[in-house]
Image (tube, rainbow, N blue to C red; front, top):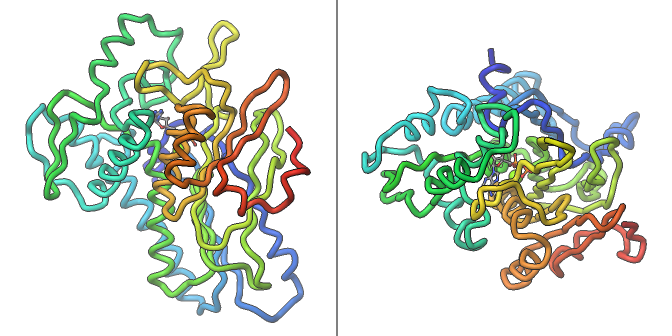
Length: 355
Ligand code: ADP
Ligand code: MG
């Protein structure tokens, strides 16, 4: 039940992790009886998976309580924000006609507010009303298309892409145009934040939460070392590590087109859609990794930067002091570029970098 209901926030189950977690701690700790105990919880959610690692000395009952608390948070968010469920709060709102006021939950309101903020910051590169275009390319609830959509269909869909038509005041949401809201580009990050908040409220200080590649960490491993996270090499054929990042208390999100894409006549189309053209991005960006405080922000920003491309993206990152790491296709290989605030997170000296 839970699996079926929860598979649906972000689409096909084939969406893999964009990040590999490097958690050497459990190996290092084997046979060592100092330090708090390790607890791991995992399962399917939002068409992908969640993984939580926490270090704390807990009674057996408390472990079970913690796990059901985590699940309750995830299911609550799915029931609010999934566009794959007709009965979600978001689906109710999406069916409402223009102008009808809707009392929205504080959680959904928060995600919409953050989405509008990132839309503004990125000059429309991130847009939660991009859904009609996403669906045309088969990355939404309607599934894979047979062929590339024609331009009149695309242009019609584009008339319905406009986050400015979403108005949120005092917990009341309404639309001024028939827009369709899709929170898939931010909800996994938001869910990671909510699980992190729940763990902190449960007095867990040292944890790592990961949902579909979007990560929140706090504290450190029992030996005092930081959480280490590997940015995966952006190829779909193998899983290998591009760079290692050191994190203490932060969120990290990655966008990439190397695991979820649609191919027609030998052309590969990314699942990230440029809301300004209604078309999959075509800017050689293979992956983008963002580190911020809140994971919802990191998640949305990673998509925004993917749409913007390295040039415009790095300019915005420098201006706004955002830590971002781009992997860009260059000939047969890859080139990497990062903003100056990303550099302190790197584990190895930049000279070792191999494109
Ligand atoms: P990634 O890990 O690559 O960021 P996500 O699952 O976080 O992937 O986001 C991809 C989803 O976001 C798409 O399936 C689509 O529903 C939505 N999306 C695509 N393009 C945009 C965009 N420009 N702005 C907002 N959401 C988008
Ligand atoms: Mg994302």
